[in-house]
Amino acid sequence: MKIKLLRLQPVLLIPLFLVCVGLQPQAVLSGEPNTEANRAPNVVMFFIDDLGYTDLGCYGSTFHETPVIDQLARQSVRFNDFYSANPVCSPTRVALMTGKSPHRLGITQWLNQPNELHLPLEEVTIGEALSQAGYQTGYIGKWHLGDKDRHMPQAQGFDWVRCVNRGGSPGSYFYPYRRSGNKNKPNGIRFWDVPDLGDGKEGDYLNDAMTDQAVSFIKENQKKPFFLCFAHYAVHTPIQAPDALVDKYKAKLGGSNEQPQDVIAERNGARTRSSQNNPTYAAMLENLDTNVGRVLQEIKDLSLRENTIIVFTSDNGGLSTVASRRSAGGPTCCLPLRAGKGWTYEGGIRIPTMVSWPGHLKPAESSVPGITMDLYPTILDLVGVGLKPKQHLDGISLVPVLKGSAGAELRNRPLAWTYPHNHGSGHSPSNAIRMGKWKLIQLTDDKTETKDRYELYDLEADIGESENLAIKHHDKTHQMAKRLSEWLESTLPEKLPRE
Image (cartoon, rainbow, N blue to C red; front, side, top):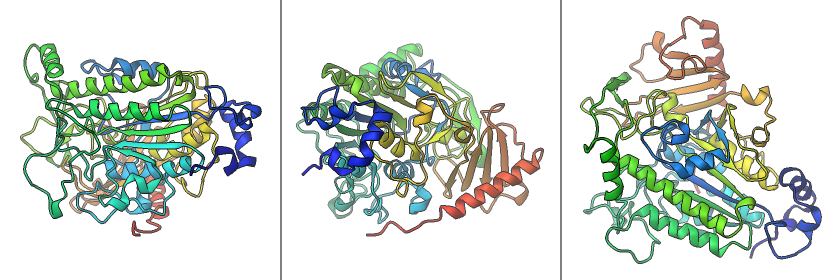
């Protein structure tokens, strides 16, 4: 049974609605049917997988075509300095759900399957917080926070769940959305199969089928406040797209699969793609863009747009760098940022992010840094539900940023990362911290000599992190290394993710 919004926190809730949402008290208390004018706002979050910072036209791409998302950006507060909590997916998903640094919960690496690690059930997720406040909650797509039945979104506050598999990517983007053969099938479980898509036929594409489900959720719940987390599998591997779209981008390249390109050498012998010219990846992005448009159009057609907050973000940077010395790099390019997914350089953690709410948030661009953990309290703040600072203790509400009133304390607050793992991109263990314009990388692998363990960059002058200033600015290096050490100590796991 749903708890009505006002019965949960009657004293605290009404002032927050008045301040943050602008609703009139008589509209909230009237008991009238939900309408655009008197109900709490809906929230739809597009959580894209492996979307690079410069993959969208609105963030600088000239090869990829993303007109719908570009238009959404023009209607949004668009962040130019937003970061994922980690350079790979599962830890960032932990941060989104809990508002905590993934380091606290002992999940700092993507979860290979089968795996006993999972999002701890005792955490109060954003889904649970909104469900307790009277929202209908839905989750569709990639979860990757546990592969057991008891660790799926249904156990973490989501009433309606579709298309969640037990792995980190689909077996295929084409019907029946499975990986061929019987590899990685312990105990009869196929981790990459995508369920809950109904009857399909050969040629059906996963993004299209998932969007059908998302549209159904919105239609079914249009009369009540809803929260939908649409966690796309795209644009994660396997890189697959409808033939007609692939042919379109091949034609843009003069009829070839890809144009020759220089490859950028990265440390540890890794190689980074130097241009966006992969026609299949571009086709995946255009299809994603079209399907974002389908959801937005449904919201508009139901006259819900002015009462629906749209959040658009990614789980980490684009896959541009790989370890193989024979490779041309990953399927995308993150330039002018350095490296990509799997690295604590900007290409691995700086992500496209935007928030739109017509009539409530004035479109703008923001250079105030934010991070995945901030989305939980920001959404609670926007919809007028009381914050939960003991839960989302590593995130802060960015409503002042969205309202254009952010102060220096937000602009200069430290943001930090730890990725103490090797990765197929060529990354070796590292930590990082950003304070204002300064970014410090700490290399922690055994092979790096002590004198070379720190890299300091001025992001205002050198967004590509090409000139290491650690020696030149020794005092700044020392100061930031101390802050990084303090952060690592303060976010040691409170508890491992056990039952």
